[in-house]
Image (cartoon, rainbow, N blue to C red; front, side, top):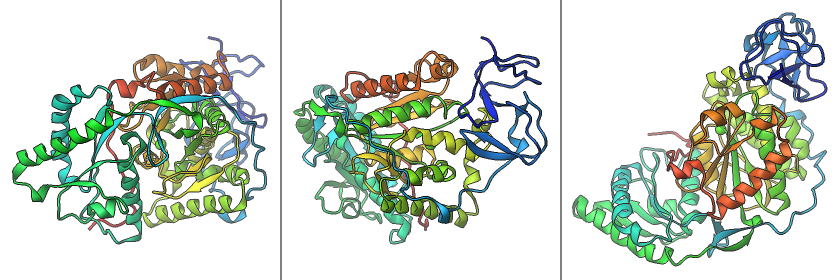
Length: 501
Ligand code: CA
């Protein structure tokens, strides 16, 4: 492969190296630039001289200032630039440039399970939810029994899910922050993929009683402290489970419009390619699904914060923009109380992958939101019911973001540069790689390779369209993602900003 870099924006004075082995000193690029030193793949090279104190520009945005003069063709390492301060929240343009909505896409459908509450499932699962971690091993034991002894007789049911978590007791349940994990777990317990109707297993003495987890709902509750011993409890769970299986197996997929899809998108283990390959491809997917009337949620506050000045103008109206700013402010204060700031986000893997800091990471992360207007902003723990492009506030932590998005989504897209085998038990998780090297290293974990965009073999639009058609197949059960095939089920991790007691 000839020396090759990707420059994203006309104003950029750095670009990232495409060649898997990096480039050697003296390597000449088409256009005349010569590498002065070895520059690894995904890392930045200076396109011209940059004076000390001058801005370093990628995506057309300042990602830092040079701490010393840099010559053309140099490797820009993370310690060679300063971290700019985050855009002030008081001076943002609110809904000043909402993009014009693109024409609707009609005729796209998938085969889904319609629920009484209007939601549509993409899988047919038996859900057993829990009010407290104390009961989790008992429920896990019962699920193994159900899988071995009952499920084979109900082949129309895709599986049994234990909705277990670390919340429920030993927490300040009346503190303001408690609303978030309780609401999140309540929504997950009535998820579209379990038909909205869970079995509930409670211990008995815990703080999060069943009516607190599921207000306005009369669930079928099995209370461990009411039963005589372990075997009787397991038998009771299995008996109730079989009653649910009899109902669930009657469900049939039917043709529903693509507008019933609620897709959560997030990234994990990002690298410098993420913002030019997988994330924009997911962004094009988002544009397509929104045009088809569906819902796309993007999240991860600390990966949005430094690009907020690009997002508030895109809000459909001023009230939505103000809500977006309020979510940023809430998280700034949350981090401040913990003695941290947004710079704590980047990982060693991000830096190995060429991302200098949180500004560069955020500019690439928000590409997942596509190019359309932001129609709605949802707070932490809020169930998203709006259509269109939605910012759903969550931490950027993969497992916490995934858990919060799970409250609303019936499909999940996860982009990755360094690689993560992430998966969830309740929804299909499709993984999109930022570079071809990862897709080749993990052919049985990565569902879609967006690295072909960097090498020029495919366009962002082509990969986005491929992903759109793939997700309709996955939603319909015609295809399974790798995470589903291997049953890779990460634990639920509800966000609890409230105190533990
Ligand atoms: Ca993440």
